[in-house]
Image (cartoon, rainbow, N blue to C red; front, side, top):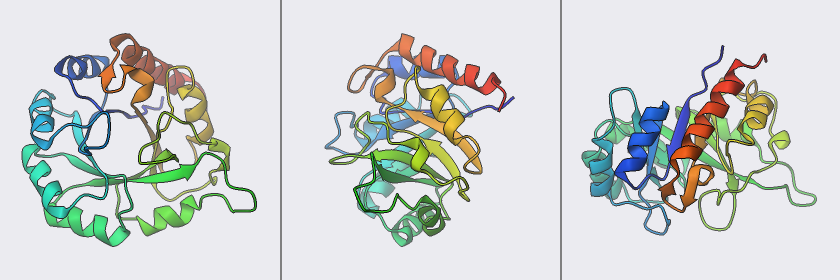
Length: 225
């Protein structure tokens, strides 16, 4: 049976950390981006990350942040992975991650639908450009940064991508099985990342929705490929 890794992003409260850990998630994301409704300070991320047990990975999400600010956040959350979600170049991501000794993810902002006459998002080239990343996170491209709870057209992605993939953008318990079925064989591996799909309000997670989401992923894992 597959075991899809699960990340929940945008946590801001201790009780939500406790529920996510009890549900069996693999990673917790903290948004270090002041313009996000789910933003926390580096210090607050450190407080929340200290609640995580062994083998649950903290991830710090940044958008076009300075190296100094990223270093400060890393000092608050030892062992955190970095998630670059802005316009960072491959060289910038590589330099920052190497200088801080951190593993990292790169978010690919995929259009909801390709514009008329324009080619589909070239995920193969994107994964090659960011080949030093531990994974490429697939999110919907909307105004601003982040997926905004929107789902892009999964069928537009290429069949073979030389990267570990993390499916994000508009996921919830009702559609995550379809997403896993659509993309499971397209990369080296496939994980999922959910935020708004397990919320009662922005930044406020819903315990029942978290458990429903994790249960849906595990049920999908049990299905034949």
